[in-house]
Image (cartoon, rainbow, N blue to C red; front, side):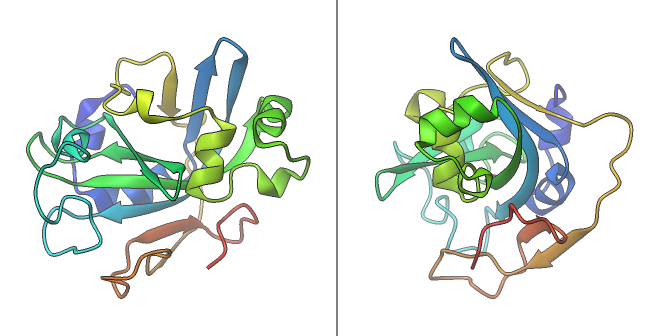
Length: 190
């Protein structure tokens, strides 16, 4: 998406609307990506599961930057990819949890050492491995980027979106901030 205004809104709005968008990564090895089928919103206020909950640190600095930038972090030696939302100085973001692979499937299989399509990008760590996203992409400007592309697919955005509590966290588990493409088999398991 080439509009900073799109990202400069509440993370819940952005997370819901990203369902059905394409997410593409350009590397020297080629293109890889697919359709975003699962996201989670992380709020600036009242959300103890958010990395911004205790304020800016060296690790979460990108999360407080301008909207439309990447916030990449590690957890258990895996990377997670987020898109910064709201205005600069406000620590909110959208975690892209899963995509349905449609582009560069063989490249993603080689990066993941897996042949099953379902195992390529279902879950944030798998997604980052399949798309060669690591800490070098932290702070990357998605609005100006040719390496990381988030865009609408065609004219139609017809999709049914389900809302549920976020998964893989231990606090604020009751907040309905997980958005999934309804009945899509590439959505993460609980």
